[in-house]
Length: 190
Image (tube, rainbow, N blue to C red; front, side, top):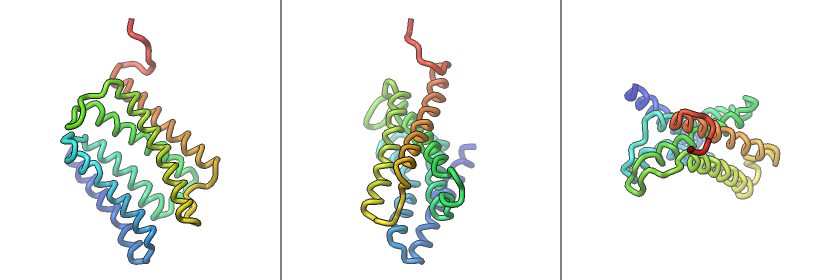
C-alpha cells in the first residue's frame, strides 16, 4: 500500500509541472511563476523531511500533493473554479483539513528541532486556521499587486473561504482528537 501511495504521489507531483510547461509556451509569465510555486509545493514535504530529519507518512504527503493538484491543475489550469460551482469552497475545506493533519503529524513526532508538542491537536487546529488566514492575505496581496487577476470575488467570498477553512480544520481536529483520546468532546480529567 505504501509503495502504491508513493508512486501515485510522484505522479501527482510530476503532473503539477504540466501547467508550468503550457504557461511557458503561451508566454504567460505571471501564470508560469504561480504554477511553478505550486509545483515546488509538491516537493516541499520531501525538503521538510531532509531539513528536520522527521519522516512524514506517505499518506500525508499524498494528501498534500492532491490538495495542490486539485487547486493548481484542476482548479486553475482546467478552470474548475469557473466551471464547477462551489469548487473554491470544497478546496478551502479540503486544503485546511489536509494542512491541519500535516501539522498534527509533524507536531506529534520528535524532530531535529523539537520533541512531541503537548496539545498537538489544538496547536494543529490553530496552525491550520492560521494557514487559511495567510492564504486569504496572499489572495488579497495578489489582487493588489496584479490588478485584474481577481483571486478574491469580494467580502462574501473571503468570509465564506475563511468559514470553510475553519470547518476543515475543525473536522480534522475532531478526527485526530477522537483517534487520540477515544472521545469527540473534551472533558477535564477527574
